[in-house]
Image (cartoon, rainbow over all chains, first blue to last red; front, side):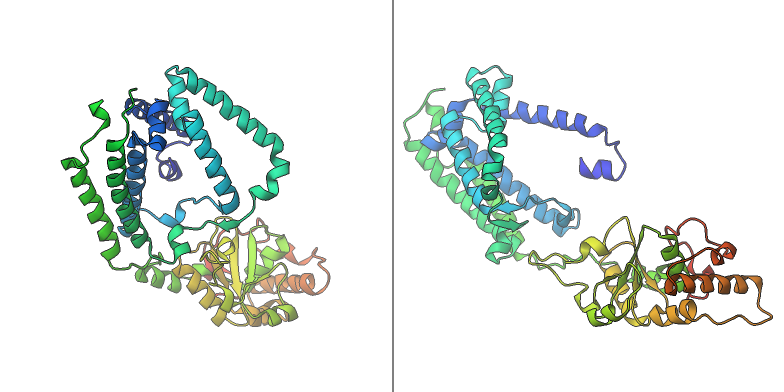
Length: 196
Length: 221
C-alpha cells in the first residue's frame, strides 16, 4: 500500500495485513469465477473456453486506460511506478516454459494456489511441482546465470521500443483485444463442448 | 452444454467494447501534455529570492574541516577546469552535462541531484553557472541542492587569502578571521587543525540543513 504508508496514513506494519486481505479477496474472486478448474483454464488452449483470455486481457487494458487517464489528470505520477527490467532472452525462455507448464499442468501459479486452497488434488500436485522447480532453478542458477542475464534492455516500455505514443499503444491494444474477443468467441462456438 | 456456447454478440459485450474503444480513442486524441513535473512559477520565484539556497564559503569550509559526511560538493565547471583545481571531495558534473539523459531517457545524474540524504552544494568560478545548475534542478523539483555563494573566487578571497580585520573590528569579525586562518592552514598546509577553530562560534556539530544563510560568515550575497 505504497502511498498510504509512505505519507504516514498507515503504519508500515499494516502492509502485510492489507496484503493478506487483498490476497484473500483475489483468491475468493478467482474461485467464484471458476478459475480454480484446470479444465476451464486450459480451455484457452483447446479452444472451448476463452473466459481466462477475456478476463485477464480486459483487466490489463482497463488498468492501462485507467493509469493513462490518472496520469493525464495528475492523480498519479507514472515515473514513480517501479518497472521490472527486461532481459529478453530469459523472458522468452521463461514464457515458453510457463506456457508449457500451463497446458500440461492446467494451472498458472496463482490459480494453482487458489485451487489447492479448496482441496483440489491436481492443484496440490502442481504446487509441489512448482516448488521443486523453484528449488532446481536455485540449485542450477550458477550454470544458467549468463543466459538469465542476457539481452538486458533496462526498464523499457513497448511503446518507447516501437517509437509510438503511449496513448496510441493503448488504443491499438484495445482494438486488438476487441477483435480477439470476437474471434475467440467464434472459435469457442465451433469447438466441441466440454463438460466440467 | 449450451453454456459453453455464448452467442457471439451479446448486448453487454457490445456496450463494454464501445466503452473501451471510446476510452482508447480518447487517449489518442487528447492533446499531448507536458509530463515534466516542474516547480510552479510562484514557488520558483520565492525559492530564487530566498537566501536559503546559499551556503557561504565559510560554511562550506567548516563542513569540509568537520568531515561532514552529508556534504556533496558538485563542481559545474568544465572537466579541464575541474582537473586543474577543485575543492576536496567534489565531483564534476559540467553544466552542459547536468540534464543529459541516458539511453532510457532518464536523467543521467538524477541519483546524485535528486535524493534525500546528501546536501548538494554547486560551485563554479563565480555565481553564474552554479546558480544556473541550481535553477535547472529546482525547476525539475530535484531536492537538497544549494549554491556556494561567490564560487571559487570568493573561496580564494575568504578562505585562502583572508583579509585581516581592522583594528576596530568586532569580536565576531576577529573570530571569523581566526577561523579563516585556521581553514587556510587546513586546506593549504596538510590538514593540521588544532588552534584556530577553538574560537569559532560554530565549530560544533556538522551543519546538516541550511537554516538561515544571512547569518553566516562573510558569504551571503
